[in-house]
Length: 211
Image (cartoon, rainbow, N blue to C red):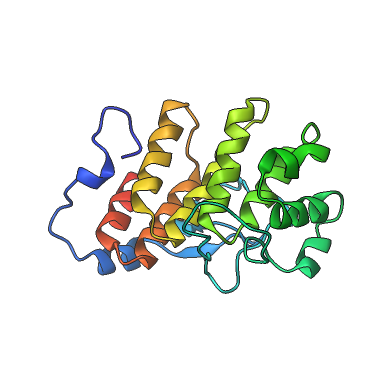
């Protein structure tokens, strides 16, 4: 639950309500105008946490990676190269390197010292495999020189939620709280959206009640 001192939301019991009706009654989830995480329309604050050029997957799917955890050079981790070109700068080259080189130290080496917050957001968002996205996210954390803010955590919550990796979603939420990364409007909207679409409407209602 997004307040310190409460138990994790997985152990919270809701009152006797109809989750579907509660969600429909109180929320109007919509995509951010920039096409990224959903926000609660009833809580428009005028504050956008979406970086330009980051778009939602029109198919709404996150593909699975190799079960072995190793990523051979296959075109399965990121999206089509024509989409990459629209980002400009070094992003197309980075995404290509990540698709063809499994070792992250080697893949990132030419750009390691120059990645911006926006670059890291795009890189994470463009991963089709939740395993690969998590591997990159952990690599950023290990390096210690990269800021990982609420935008990056929102992206990972969405990727993991779409893949129904609920325990990992919960762990990531706990990590945010431990690192004092303050959730924002779009964080709650993301959690409500992925739990609702993942068939866990009671948990979605819990997040709705905490907004």
